[in-house]
Amino acid sequence: MKKVLKWIGIIILVLVAAGTTLFLIYVRPFMQKMKETSTINYDKNLTLVLGGGGNSGILTSDSLVIVIDTKMDDAAEQLSKMVKELAGNKPILVVNTHYHPDHSKGNSYYKGQTIIAGGNYTKEFWVKEAGEETLPTQWLKDRMDIKMGDDTVTLLNLARNVHTQSDVVVYLHKRKMLFAGDVILNKQAPVLMGVADPDGYMEAFELLPKKFDIQKIVPGHGPVGGIEVLDQFRQYFNDMKMAASDASKKEELIAKYKDWNQIPFLMSPEASVSAFKKKLKHE
Image 1 (spheres, rainbow, N blue to C red):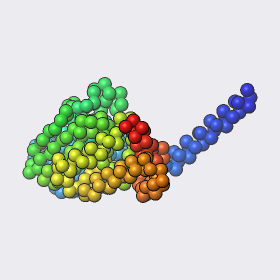
Image 2: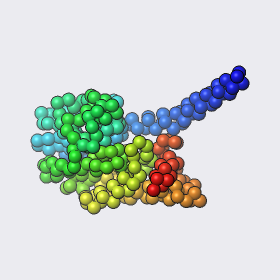
Image 3: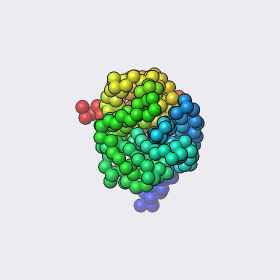
Image 4: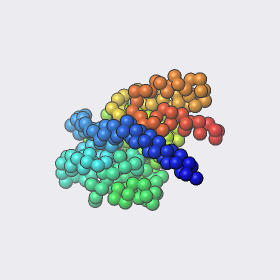
């Protein structure tokens, strides 16, 4: 019995050491980088605030200010101050691309304003996962078009499992710009856990260019780019699916993405391959 307990103790120590190493080498640097923010004054009515959680946008007009994703921690507070300064007495409309805290935790700074999120969530689910203080005031079941100065803003609920069960994208028609939330990332591996569905992603990659004339993409995380951001992310999914079905190509395909932001076992090419393997087993 003493030998068994000794080995259990050794195993626990090894696991703790491995977890600590993983945190120090991958998770902590990733979180520190995620907290960094940068501001782009895209034009006189559009400001992009990247990082600090999910990428955000602030769109202003004479009668309304729209905020796309509200960030987390200190960045959420700083974003809210910027928004309120730009808004003055004008109403603020917050759009959450999805419920994850890095995109919605700052909702608590917009009490009394309208907060919209995808209608495939329930109130109970949102409160459990993101907290009551971030709860939206309105659920979007399908599509909403909003006139903003000389531009039209479309909110579209994808209404199926992609990154989550109710991802919302935002398209600015005149600017031909898509705020994609975590449906599209730029040089960052996705987290394919929970309801996240590789097939849902692939359907979204086909749907969005048909719905909208996309020339600029603000991804959920990573730099702003053109339509190539979508194409690169779609290629990642194609490559991971190929790696899952053909072991001889796995090493080569995974190596293509060694410079992408990733965390082993959670958001990495290897984790994506595992998700595709599970999917293929059920087909």
